[in-house]
Image (cartoon, one colour):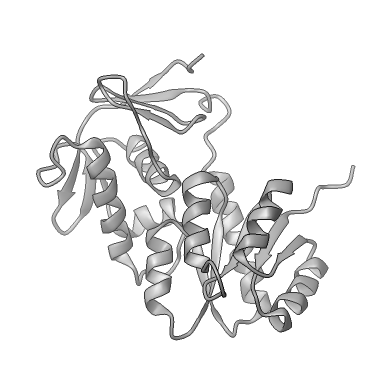
Length: 243
């Protein structure tokens, strides 16, 4: 039986880069969907669901960071940003909102292929084991349904949570009371091998604290371990799947 090829959505307004790159990726065994701007990318997503999105940051109209935020908040899709060398701030923002990796233009296509495969491997490992995939999490009165990505507070109110916040919370829930340093969290949550953007973790932790702490300025659940990272300071139990 023929294996289904990995499907990529390539979003870049520069046809001189996009089209040759799409041809190269096709020769590497990927199925490539092309979009020249964010609007066409959104239309393509309504028709088909890719396994990974390659997203240019600088585009006319809606920029790549805006589309990246939309993908992170509404879809469980790995995103690799394609950035120009001088866009360090954009790379930081992209990683902070949940992009999985970035590649700086001009890049070697073989490097991009290696990063695509690395991100896809990490995304695959992030999927819960079959025996546990239906189980939820309960912690300090909170409930998290990982299949529906639904976070419920102790009063039963559903609290909206982004994909990046979900990944970070699951990392803590899978390792309660363990000190998690920034490098480990970056690898688990964003799958990034570079260690240049530690503040991306700090910002995501701050956002998550605003969701689950009674007072985010005096956190009791996600505690800072000075010089070590962060720790979820409560017990976690796995619960029966929701109906």
